[in-house]
Image 1: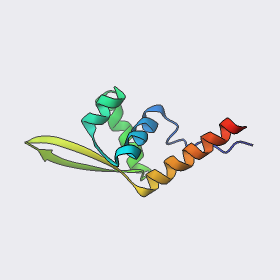
Image 2: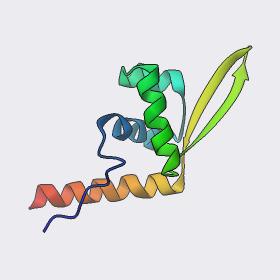
Image 3: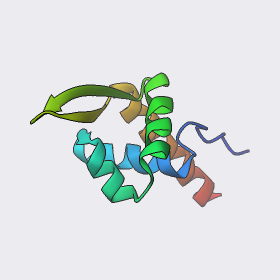
Image 4: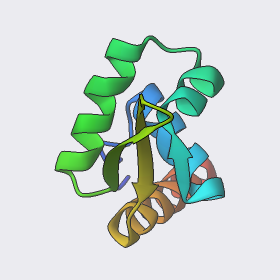
Length: 94
C-alpha cells in the first residue's frame, strides 16, 4: 500500500518553492519569481498556503524605499519536505 503524498507539497509551485528554500533557507520573493517563472499573484497565493501550514515564515520590510518580501523555511517545512521525498522514493521502489 502507498502512503499518501503531502497535499500541501504536492502542488508543483509549492514544491518548487520549498525545494528552492531547502537549498537556501532564506530567499527573496523576486528570486522565487525568477526561478519559478510564475506570476506574482500565483506565488503570493502559494506562499500564503505554505505559511498557513507553518512550512515557511514571511518577512516584509523595506529596502531602499521598496517593499521586500523574504521567505524562510521552518523546521516543520524541512521535515515535511524530507517526509515527502521519502514517500516519493517508496512509490518508486514499489
